Image (cartoon, rainbow, N blue to C red; front, side, top):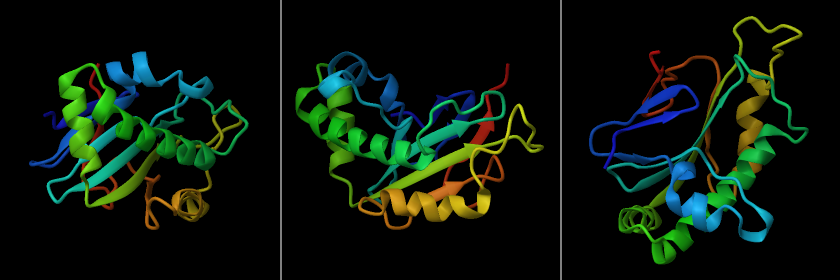
Length: 174
């Protein structure tokens, strides 16, 4: 199982004893589940901690690309959480790839579910790249959006390696 996942130009490195799966790139999601019910979106990564905690991880990097979707980023994350959990529940019995089926089974035996959104914005907002999310509101809005799954989600905004996140994040070297 992998300790590292590359997501949208950022590398997530998990602590020893964890595994991480770039679920939205999996064969199950792409070929079997993505088009269910008119299409679904998924969280960027799924990680299982050594204590049995399942982490659903979303990375948003707005340093180079504006947000063009009219919906709230928090509503989008909540929708992805729901779709990812449904996908994992289905993958554990329907995935064609045995490794993916095993990962989904392990994920669905978790003791608790946590949601984390890591949002990277321009340090100096401008008209071209404005702040997408007000940092002081982000944690509250994420909590409101996903509280049925995780009443205490983590929303890391200000720094690349936020101390509240149990993994390390760094830009992928060119």
